[in-house]
Image 1: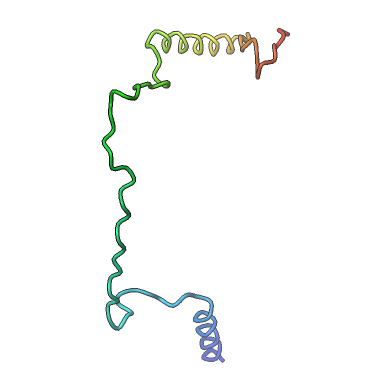
Image 2: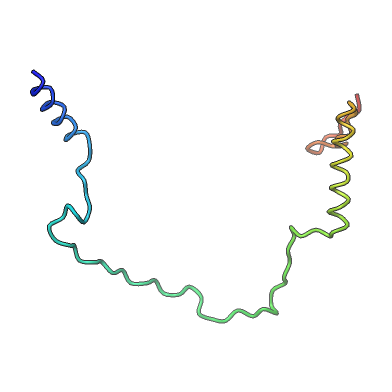
Amino acid sequence: MLELTVRFLSWMLSICTPRPRGRHRLGAVPPLRITPAPPPRFTELLDGNASRLVRPYVLDPAEHRRRQRERRRALYLATLGIDVGPDHIHGVPVAAR
Protein backbone atom coordinates (compact mmCIF):
# COMPACT_ATOMS: atom_id res chain seq x y z
CA MET A 1 0.00 0.00 0.00
CA LEU A 2 2.89 2.36 0.78
CA GLU A 3 4.40 1.79 -2.65
CA LEU A 4 1.09 2.64 -4.30
CA THR A 5 0.83 5.87 -2.30
CA VAL A 6 4.39 6.86 -3.20
CA ARG A 7 3.78 6.15 -6.90
CA PHE A 8 0.54 8.17 -6.82
CA LEU A 9 2.25 11.14 -5.12
CA SER A 10 5.17 11.07 -7.56
CA TRP A 11 2.71 11.00 -10.48
CA MET A 12 0.77 13.98 -9.00
CA LEU A 13 3.99 15.92 -8.47
CA SER A 14 5.10 15.26 -12.04
CA ILE A 15 1.80 16.72 -13.26
CA CYS A 16 1.64 19.71 -10.91
CA THR A 17 5.25 20.88 -10.99
CA PRO A 18 7.04 22.21 -14.05
CA ARG A 19 9.69 20.11 -15.65
CA PRO A 20 13.17 21.25 -14.65
CA ARG A 21 14.88 23.22 -17.33
CA GLY A 22 18.48 24.13 -17.49
CA ARG A 23 21.72 23.45 -19.18
CA HIS A 24 22.31 20.26 -17.20
CA ARG A 25 18.99 18.81 -18.42
CA LEU A 26 19.41 19.58 -22.11
CA GLY A 27 21.09 17.22 -24.55
CA ALA A 28 22.74 19.96 -26.59
CA VAL A 29 23.29 23.65 -25.99
CA PRO A 30 20.77 25.71 -28.00
CA PRO A 31 22.25 28.30 -30.37
CA LEU A 32 22.38 31.87 -29.09
CA ARG A 33 19.84 34.24 -30.55
CA ILE A 34 21.40 37.60 -31.32
CA THR A 35 18.94 40.43 -31.66
CA PRO A 36 20.08 43.51 -33.55
CA ALA A 37 20.47 46.68 -31.52
CA PRO A 38 17.85 49.36 -32.21
CA PRO A 39 19.03 52.45 -34.06
CA PRO A 40 19.89 55.47 -31.93
CA ARG A 41 16.96 57.79 -31.26
CA PHE A 42 18.93 61.03 -31.38
CA THR A 43 21.68 61.58 -33.85
CA GLU A 44 22.24 65.33 -33.53
CA LEU A 45 24.30 66.86 -30.77
CA LEU A 46 22.50 68.67 -27.99
CA ASP A 47 23.37 72.30 -27.39
CA GLY A 48 23.86 72.92 -23.68
CA ASN A 49 23.32 76.68 -24.03
CA ALA A 50 19.87 76.20 -25.55
CA SER A 51 18.30 74.81 -22.38
CA ARG A 52 18.16 76.30 -18.92
CA LEU A 53 19.58 74.32 -16.06
CA VAL A 54 16.79 74.60 -13.54
CA ARG A 55 16.39 72.43 -10.49
CA PRO A 56 13.08 73.31 -8.86
CA TYR A 57 13.68 70.87 -6.02
CA VAL A 58 16.77 72.72 -4.81
CA LEU A 59 15.88 75.24 -2.13
CA ASP A 60 17.73 78.22 -0.84
CA PRO A 61 19.65 77.13 2.31
CA ALA A 62 18.03 79.93 4.34
CA GLU A 63 14.57 78.83 3.16
CA HIS A 64 15.36 75.25 4.08
CA ARG A 65 16.47 76.27 7.59
CA ARG A 66 13.35 78.41 8.04
CA ARG A 67 11.03 75.52 7.08
CA GLN A 68 12.92 73.15 9.36
CA ARG A 69 12.63 75.63 12.23
CA GLU A 70 8.87 75.95 11.61
CA ARG A 71 8.43 72.16 11.63
CA ARG A 72 10.42 71.78 14.86
CA ARG A 73 8.50 74.60 16.53
CA ALA A 74 5.16 73.02 15.50
CA LEU A 75 6.28 69.65 16.88
CA TYR A 76 7.39 71.20 20.16
CA LEU A 77 4.12 73.10 20.55
CA ALA A 78 2.18 69.92 19.69
CA THR A 79 3.77 68.22 22.70
CA LEU A 80 2.29 71.04 24.81
CA GLY A 81 -1.15 70.59 23.23
CA ILE A 82 -1.00 73.70 21.04
CA ASP A 83 -1.99 73.28 17.39
CA VAL A 84 -0.20 75.62 14.99
CA GLY A 85 -1.29 73.89 11.80
CA PRO A 86 -1.85 75.54 8.43
CA ASP A 87 -4.43 78.28 7.93
CA HIS A 88 -5.64 76.74 4.64
CA ILE A 89 -6.06 73.05 3.84
CA HIS A 90 -6.72 72.26 0.18
CA GLY A 91 -7.61 75.89 -0.46
CA VAL A 92 -10.25 76.00 2.28
CA PRO A 93 -9.62 78.34 5.21
CA VAL A 94 -9.50 76.47 8.51
CA ALA A 95 -10.95 78.23 11.55
CA ALA A 96 -9.21 78.02 14.90
CA ARG A 97 -11.03 75.93 17.49
